[in-house]
Length: 322
Image (cartoon, one colour):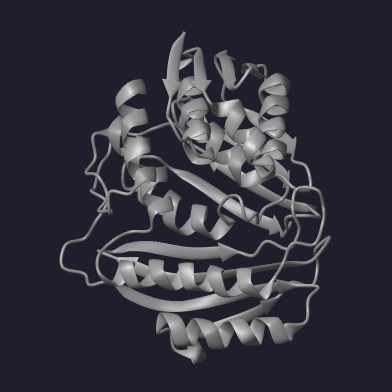
C-alpha cells in the first residue's frame, strides 16, 4: 500500500490522490487526510458521498482510520452511472474524482449526477465545461458536460450529465503562441435573493477587475430548489479559455446562514486578484492544479503558474503516483 503524506494537505490534493489511486487501482493511505476533514467539516459531506459512490459503483473500499484515509480501489468499468449528492456536497467533485479512470476506459461513459452543481467547495460547471474540458481536448481527452438544472449549496436539486470518451493519441499543445490575454465579460448568477445584491457585485467587479460594466450580465435563476449566488469572469490566455469564478457561501455544512458582506468583498477581491494575474500571463491556480496530472500522464507541456504551495503539492503528488 502506497502512503501519501503531506504536512498540510488540502482537499484538492486529497481528491487527486484518491482519483489517481482509482485510475491505477493502487491501494493508498493518505496520512493526515481524515484529520484534515475533521478540521474542515465542510468537506465531510463530499467525502461521505465519495465513500457512498465507490461502494455503489463497486470501485473499492474508502474509509477513514485514525487520522488517515484508506482507499483500496477496484477497477472501475466504463458505463452509465447515476449518483445524487447531498444538499451540502458537490456533484462536480464526483465527476472530477472519476474522470481520470473513465478517460482510460475502452468505451464511452455517461454520468448522470444530481444534487449540488454549484458549490463554494468546488468549481462551477462552466469552469469544467469551458476551461478544463477544452484544455483536455487538446491532449486527446474528450468529454462533455451539460448543466440541466442549477443546484446550489444548501439546497441541492441540480442535475447535470457528463460524457467521457476513451483517450485518443493526440496532443495539439495547450497554448496558441502570440495570443495576448484578454477578458471577454462576466456573469453573475443569482437565485431567490434580492437582485440588489447582484447589482452591488456588478459594480464591484467592474471597479476591481476592469471588466466593462456593460459586459457583466446578471442572470436570475428562476427554477432552483434554493438560494444561490455565483460570479464568473470569462477570459483567455494564449488561446485557452479561462473561467475565473467565485461561488458565494450562503450556508455552512450545518445548514446555518453563513453569508456576510465581509465574505462578499473578500471573495470579489480574490477573483479580481486572479484576473489581474491572468492578464500578467499566469493561469488561475485551480485550473493549473486540475491540469497537472493530465499533463504528466500525457507528456504535455506544463501550464504556466506561480509555484504556490498548492501547485507544488499537486506536482509532488504526481511525482509520487505517476
